[in-house]
Amino acid sequence: YRSIMQIGLVGFPGAGVKTVFSAITGLTPAAGIGSTIVGTSRLAVLQVPDPRLELISSVYNPKRSTPSTVEIAEFPGVFGARSDPRVLAKCRESDALALVIGAFDSALDEAQGSCVTSLSGALRDEMILADLTVAESRLTRLTASLKKRKNEIEEAERKVLIRCLEQLEMGRTLLELDLVPEDQRRIRGFGFLSLKPVFLLINIGERDVGKEQEFAEKFLGESLTARALCGDLESELAT
Image (cartoon, rainbow, N blue to C red; front, side):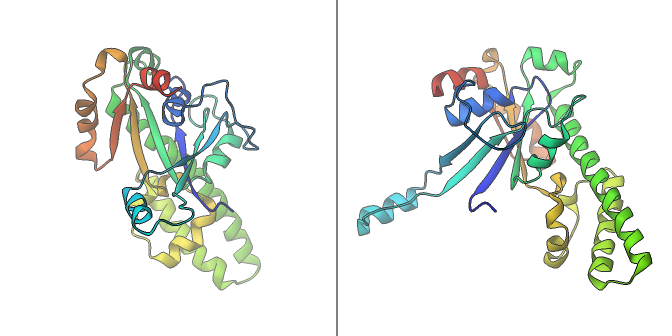
């Protein structure tokens, strides 16, 4: 059980997940934290700046003020041809996902000319496919169990999973599925990737510095929150 929110950084190989992690946390690639998370290079806890806390502290002058914190974890190898199922399992424990899109020349070359927007769609498809595998597997076990004996809790879960499976088979994320809170609780333990809040971090090259807003605006029509940054440059400044 975690008491603070964890945001997982994920992306295709070569997108610069580790570089973006360094830019956000200020940790160098060699400064790996001794973590028990399988397949995760680094883990960091960051304080969240909050002007409201500063204002309240200045007024009441408490002995101690504790800012909110967030946990940042990098999950290299989650997607792609050499996807590690152990990493995927740990990634499912994150509360939200930051999808790192490589928009610099070498990353786009490795993606065989795919544009930035199509890469975000490809990441979404990978999440849907991963969730589809989990939903199918659980439904198979539930069906077998219900044939042996009736169970109201399992039957309710089965009905929710059937809806999830239909949604995924249509190529849609579970975040787009209208689930009542009770149904959300029934499937919470599966850690469905496409049910998590997501935002995009577009990792641009140095020659595109100054065009961050232009890259972010490409995703306005997709109702996605996006921010562009030059991971190489910002990681150098941060570390």
